[in-house]
Image 1 (tube, rainbow, N blue to C red):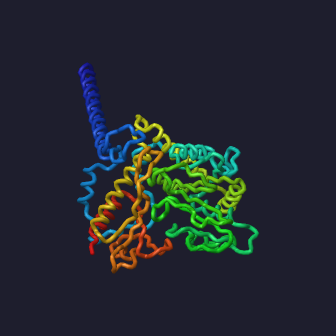
Image 2 (cartoon, helix red, strand yellow; image 1 turned 60 degrees about the horizontal axis):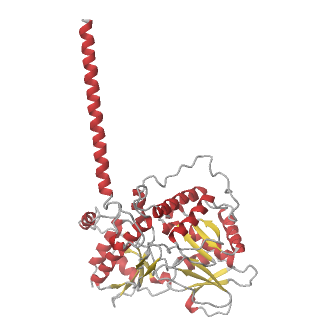
Length: 450
């Protein structure tokens, strides 16, 4: 009897082991198939080595939408579950378009910050900007070298909570401290819509908004803001006043290869950049200025010290990692670690979006867009067109005087020309929203007829 029980126990053990083995094998196969299926859904092109001189039209990337995906989007209804048209908000330049790339990068930009790290107000090193994290400074210099868009030698790096804080810090640093009246601040229209608001926000006795630089005729000191490529119209800009006593601030938030050909490294006294538009990480709230004059840099640092007592170290460390991955992707493009360059991917997406927009505008006959001449881009080593982060649309219909209101009537939210110092017949539309939103915008724009 005991012998029989032992034999049955051995059989049960064998059966149990075999059952567990089969179950385990089935689960693993299921997970593998699921992973393959998700990967096929997420990735469309085959990996390819990306080299300078490769034409954008010839590029295919792991994360770029496939033709089948585009066809699927065309069949999606443009109405919500309640039967009414969805409001498309393209008023802000929220760069969620870049989520697609960063999801494909997985955990390459993941960082872990222990509870004891970054507790001090002060950063290590001996930077003039005492709250600048050394690793962020290193990666800023490296990225500008990779992109070829800015001179960093002989410059002081000042980090800020986005370029908005840096703009205010620059105004504070450049405004005369002993003047009996505020210095005039100007920019060529159409200018960035927030410039007037930020300049006069606190009613400072140091500076005041004086409007369009083309109309400025006062024989007195002034600060001219030069945004290049320009927000909202995308054109390369230069100073226009060019008189004695003038001080320049160059806002180069969009001077990156995905938006415009990089003709040469910019070499100005004070330039501003931001991760918001360079990598898409707007929520990180990190910008930086490259400042030639040490005294101006010191005053900018003092403003930020008084305003926010420095800049978040956690955000700086995250931004440093993101910039590192961007640089790696360009330097190692085509390899197993970085099958595609961030700038090549972004350029391809922008190229496709502008193609779709120009087709929709042409078919409608109701709108017009700026025309840009191709130029040589040192980063791609090729002649390429400009494809700005915003579309500067003009409503050409004789019965449309306010393009913003016209778009709102079609449940498209965009920013009208009056906010940029020009005619309300213009409207600025963000090109950086998610694929679903942008596709819906193109579909709805195509349906607008006279």
